[in-house]
Length: 67
Image 1 (cartoon, rainbow, N blue to C red):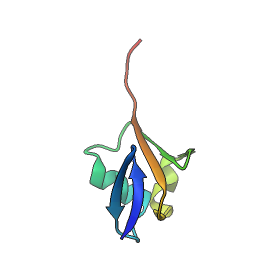
Image 2: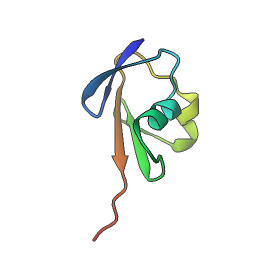
Image 3: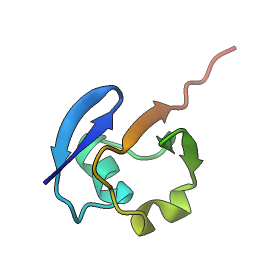
């Protein structure tokens, strides 16, 4: 297990987890989600290719309609 920061909260995840798995575990619907890893936006097409690393800082953001 490794420790990461997810939206400011320290959590433990399997050392073989990728970002897509993290999103599926922590959100009901990945549609409309933006993901920032260590202060860099990660395109959805890369989520399954990037493995979580110890002490990563991950932020999820939901798109909100409004005006």
